[in-house]
Length: 368
Image (cartoon, rainbow, N blue to C red; front, side, top):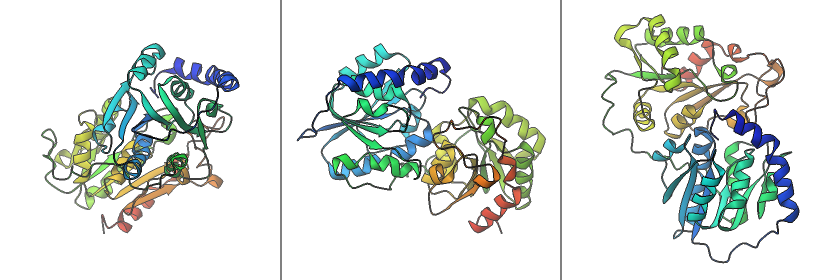
């Protein structure tokens, strides 16, 4: 969903639930088509969700090798699909403009539409508006989204989101796959010209995005302490981030004062360039955001700082990964869909110590 569209979020929340209930009163469920040649996938969420939901692609191609797969995404997450393989067409929908979106959907009919949205009501409404023969989506508690689908799959807050996405394949009798459809050809790509990365380095990604993003960020003093410890181990520091993080990244650069031993790529690197930088890094340390999931998917040794995020729901997966958590008993791990902040919630990220990050990097064989 477009992250800064506050008005859209309010309309989605207060109007979408009621409208979907009314649709359910009059909409007849359809039977699954006997022949399937085209499958559309709605993927309107953030980069991390898009990476995890890419696990649908290898499973669908294996079960239906001759089908055409169309990804319908938003402008906000379209760039991630340059890193994903296994689909045939990408359609960027102006999801804040329902009339234009409906027109585009009608121009691209599909046999089956799979909506990966968990709470976004417009995703369910757009499913209802598609020119499809059958539809699959999540039945999320208290959201009324399931009324728009021919087949609804229960969305569980007791399992990792990767497993929830895979459950969307069950109505198709398609064997789920834990493989993410991330390209693996970035390591040998031409190095980024703007970054001087000729010595071993670790990528630090300090900033989150979205609602209450500050609650998912580690204190700046901890990043300074960590960077200093890594520099003592002979490692260069690379600070990543988006365009909006560039000012803070430069501020961190000046505070560290490491000279050539630190490089800021925040706001400079495309996702393809970032993937190349990650693939050639010794490790990545990140808050729980899309970059952490990307790093893990690229099989880079990755340490993620979860804090309020429940790692059982959204932790990074992989052989070279470490999730550092704050337990529910300590006030953490309360985020499931991403908006469940308690009233007057404490910022628990400071409860993750620099020593625990260093220990994780030692366990991953990054430092001695």
